[in-house]
Length: 57
Image 1 (cartoon, helix red, strand yellow):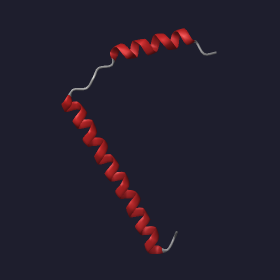
Image 2 (spheres, one colour):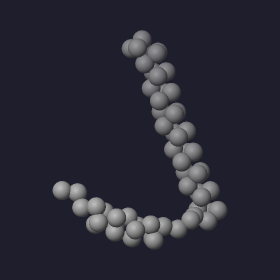
Image 3 (cartoon, helix red, strand yellow):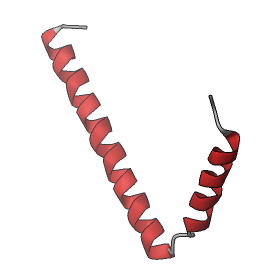
Image 4 (cartoon, one colour):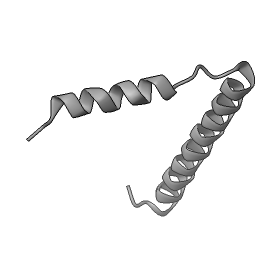
């Protein structure tokens, strides 16, 4: 069964470990995320172009 007390205790422990990121850390995470989105979008676009070129749609 689901033990709510244990879950609440674990959530409280994790909450106390959290910290607000400073501006440098936030900017780094934002840049990495943006680069990841661009890479995934480019891969999807390339696959779409390849399938369109060979008429596999």
